[in-house]
Image (cartoon, rainbow, N blue to C red; front, side):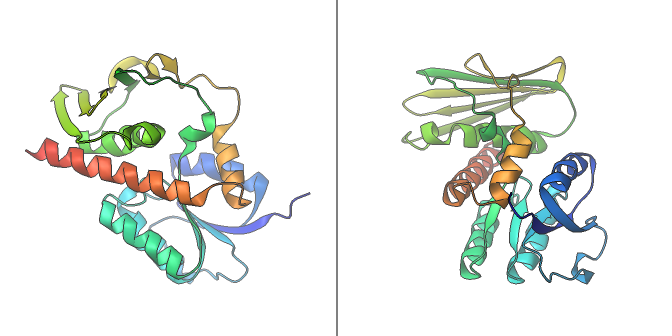
Length: 242
């Protein structure tokens, strides 16, 4: 029997509630507050992890606060909306000798997909949001899923096009990776070269949270893929602005 970790939680929105329901079974929750409350008022005595489940724009300051308090931190993706800010937070965690982990739940689906000369990644759902928000909410996951393949490519070129409710991205190196994000679809799809990432048998969210809490995860690899996804988004935002 594993002794449950004592944790604190910042954020209790729609997604936060799903995470909290799982954490309630695998950890001892000592406090929960929203990003609008003063999280600095809570005692951190005996707290082993703090989970940041707040909106993206709040992550940097909240994560920084708890890292400086020498708390291990789990943060919803993205860690920040800027590569350099994220890099600085990882350095802060290292200097304070604590762990920092960013949501990579898609890796826990353990799906197999094959990479070809020309690759197509498709996500469709009924949703809303700007091109910027789609990069962080959807493309972020695909970038870290493809990390081992994209990191090998040289002289990458980036292309982006916004077509009504669609965001179309391309990364061109020795191989080509085309991404299609459609948020005006009545069907829900997520595929990489026709491999269905919505079809899985386990509970990837529970598996991720348990592995993070009980140190059964490669934290260095998580750092690499998190920063990589941040960097890819920064590059596409530069293209979109032009």
